[in-house]
Image 1 (cartoon, one colour):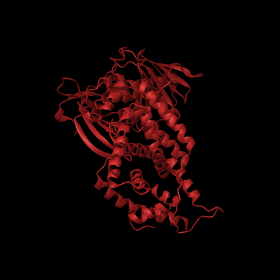
Image 2 (spheres, chains in turn orange, red):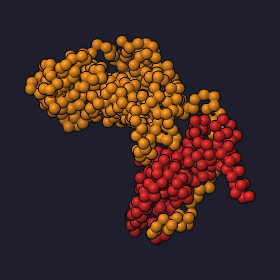
Image 3 (spheres, chains in turn green, orange):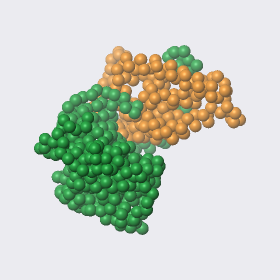
Length: 396
Length: 191
């Protein structure tokens, strides 16, 4: 054993550690380094993504399967929306990050909620997300079309993203285009902090009800982590990591052609027509799936898979068989209900309090939000009735 | 005279860093200057020479891709940058639980003598020390490696990790206590 620093140094000096390099590796790497350097001088740097490293988890819950179509589309849209709102991240000290974002032809990152989603983009408007269970969604924003594959059921869903402008430079979900218009400012410098073994420098940007905290490695100048907090939507926070820019992404990754042997399920992913009624119908449907008639514990779609799996394991869902047609209707109900939340404007200050509340409880408010320009809040109660309530009368 | 020569060499090397942003030849010379040092650091952090080669490759390829954006001006800046990338890449490798287990398994394997029985001697050897280091936090593992295997000064370690020098000193004091306990348990497990 050692008593102090100098003794440990002596011990280390006595150790016989083979650190002799292999000349072959040294030579080969030298060639590769120079080749990459020369290539980088001609075009943006490239890195190869190994999609085999994407996490593989199996979703077993029947309810999760029922909801899969809704969940993946929602997650895709929300994942993008989160990032779309979180791009205001620059500082003068790390202007090259902004430059990288502005110039990126491709980008990949991981969106970490309770479920990790791998996201990849390629210009002019292609996107691919991979969720646990290898649920892959590809969207071509230039055509307003998408496809999701459901490997557990050998099915695929074709999506028509109606009511979205076709111009990728204008539509709200195109992250790359949003990144290219970043203003070069951060509201607050947070100094350095150790996160996951790395010392990172933080910057905070607040816009309306969204706070973005961006962490950059000051040594390598890499964008390492973005934390997005929604002031008016507690529980919807998301952390993005594993950013890579200008990685090599083959066009085949963004193919809208389904795998051989998969059957088609069509979904009209209209994001413009959802209303409060859709949320109410979703709440009603969920309460009919549970044995005790309770509402969902959360409305965060990113938590949905985990919540449904846990509830399934705990035997909280009814055992009744449902037809394929009914499952599709349920998925659409869920999708439209949650999309209503994503369309609420900043300042709606929505809250959900439906956990453990049973359908029919007319005295318990489970959801409330403020309409634009309104003095009062719309409150949905446990019997799914709706009333206007003054702010001072809302639950604390 | 010697001092003047040293300064001249230093200035020439600093020029090399500036030139390496645009000239392959300058980058090639920096590569030759630092390959061995980074490889050695990777062996010390990762135990396995083949893994160390892979991570060394990742480090220098990252340098090749990013050096045009590198803001440092001196060889010291460049060296700090290299170590920072190497430390991050090594930590990223170890963070993956299964790989950490593999490294520990390999270290444990080397603790055994040729006839298959466990080496119960009280002599400190590299596998035992590595197993004890691997139990530390990734950042602390890096500090131990930079300080005791690379023989870097506190000031330089602080620059590489982008922390204050005093923090490195204080942290190292705590690390040594923890390392001592870790070693104790490594030895005890074998007896």
